Length: 81
Image 1 (tube, rainbow, N blue to C red):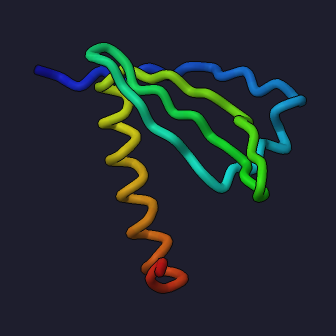
Image 2: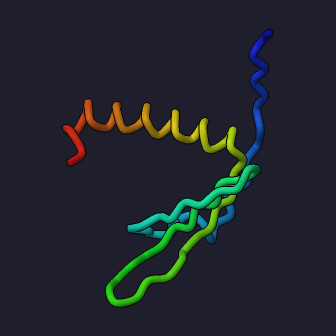
C-alpha cells in the first residue's frame, strides 16, 4: 500500500501566535477519543488554558513525534531531567 501525502494549507489565526503557557496536563480517554486538558497552575489555584480532543490514532502519531523531538532536543541540549 502506498503512503499518500497531501499538502494542506493551514490557517494560523493571529490571536494564537503567542500561544498559551501550561505547566500541567491531564489526560483522560474513552474508546473513541483522548482528551488533553492543559493547565496553568500557580498554587493554590489553576486554570485550564486549552482542551484538545484527539482520536486514538492521532494521539499515537503525536507520541511518536514527541519521542523523536525529545531525542533531537537531548542530542542538542543534553538530557531532560
